[in-house]
Length: 575
Image 1: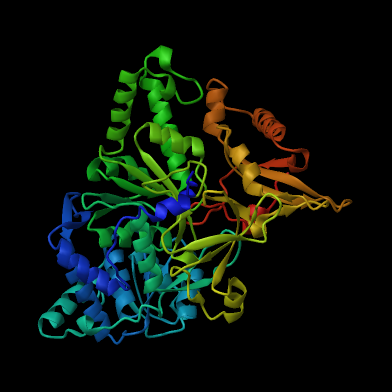
Image 2: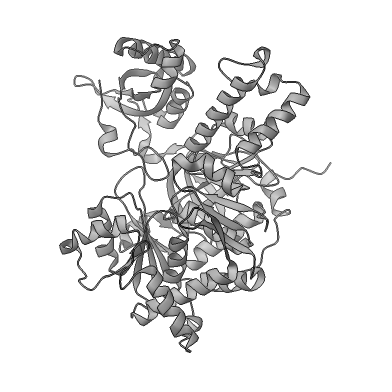
């Protein structure tokens, strides 16, 4: 009898066909040629009316802005982009990365950090929202390059975005076609990203356009993007996850993009733009899931409601169909897939969405890998796994322990060039072509990857037992009365053993509901959290037991992809 191939090998025979691209200019010109009059972006004008931007217009705007940047003398120079997700941001990113080296900066950073990144990267120009640029101009004495040009997206000035667009358009029409003549080496530094990792200070990640283009093609190979798709962009564009998969992938594919106006406007925007694809982080998925269950239990006949949990499985067939349609309509009516990254999604939530006819595909990636490494696909899905290797990318486990857990290492055309001006760190991280991720995981017999934690966050007990904080946090966060948690290893003054401490931010709204509407006292909160900790300890072996806990009165500080930072103020222990 013929032996059945592992799923990872079966997948290789199913990839969607792709058309090769190696740089952004080639991608932009190709898409404008193929999809010319199709909608690339849906935007709102000053009156709140929805307008469309065609692929041809998008290309022309990139060319016009790029022409102006060349005329300013910025060919092959470092150009920063900062601001909320917008059409202007997208045009600026592509123009900057074709003319020179683009430096996308997180709009949430402290102004001193923004200036530091500008100085370190030797930025000659920064394009962005007035909120961010004004803050830098207020501290202009800290900017090392006195000739830095500030290009405002949203207010008029000599070098405003709209003025540069008009000037570039006029120059191009008068025969200045230098932008068309640019030849891009796909393997040189063109994207410089400063990461906001959960485990320490920012590092400069050097990416080439081949790194990102290979990732676009690999993703398209396992998740088909339709021309009729509309991507709803919520996560910050400066991050590779949203930039590669929520912006550049749809542009390659001929799909459309609409930008969320802010977290409080998500539901409103869903009903206005009717998206079919949403990239999100687990936190956003959990919030949507909570709201859906809440509304489902409110609107269903009494006998089908479930006080805590999902009533869907117990519904008769005809009601399931009605619920599926109703849920889909609240999400805009066209939604077909959630793509989830940045952290592991709860498998039960993934399964619940699948029952509602909403495919939820989670993956695993890092900025250094442009970003995707593994993903669930159109062909194979496993709710509790990060996925299978994407086309042309390999991963394996370095020095696995008895349970098969070790550091995940990755090889492929998506792996970064190295860390900016840090050869030592690059050599420590890329060894014989393999990128050492710093993440812990294991691989099953079918090639599915499971993330178990980070090397640096592993807590090692006195007798050599490894405890992955993420596992304990998963059980804590699974309790609806707990909003979020951070698990740490601590030592007592008179003892060199390591003990597990949990810092917990309770869900006051859920606790109030649990107490039948009365505002909880400190003692009641303490008792409820204490019971939750005891319940978690019953599920864990003794050496993983939470020995002490503290209650936070505000949320943990997070990165822009909503991961809790494992450094700084978050590491202070509340007793």
